[in-house]
Length: 163
Ligand SMILES: Cc1cc2nc3c(=O)[nH]c(=O)nc-3n(C[C@H](O)[C@H](O)[C@H](O)COP(=O)(O)O)c2cc1C
Image 1 (tube, rainbow, N blue to C red):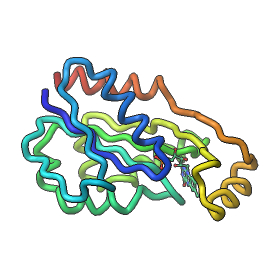
Image 2: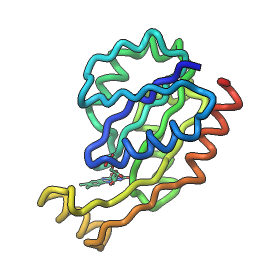
Image 3: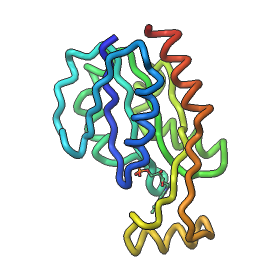
Image 4: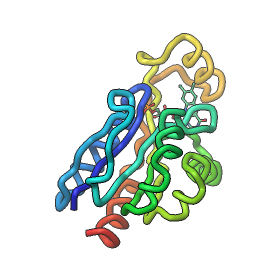
């Protein structure tokens, strides 16, 4: 299976989760596409595509939204799985964020979609981000809350339906 993990990340957590997914997809040949570096990738040659974005202020990153719009028809012809990184603590809100992060039709079409958790990396945040997180999350300490079990579920669903 020729698979691409296409992602965008502000502070590196989504890139880290992309790497974790690739390490567990041992039967696939995996390519990484960072949309910040490769804004218009040609995705026709891939059989499977895994999309990943982080969440900011309740929305996925714009670069991913634009990518999905532009490649909508092609993505619908691929084996597709989705994930988001975020630190929303409420499980119901996590699922709402996940459902909103990608176009609805792609979300419904995907074989699996995962809220993969995230990280607060204060050393990488700018002044405004730091102030927002201090106020909302009531912490100024870096923390990692990547959900390894949810990533495992995503992998299992991909393996069961694609490979
Ligand atoms: C200013 C700011 C706003 C954020 N807003 C949200 C949000 O609305 N929902 C959420 O789940 N996580 C939110 N987060 C958490 C990020 O999604 C999380 O830190 C993620 O791991 C970042 O991944 P990245 O480094 O790949 O961009 C926010 C983080 C910051 C710094």
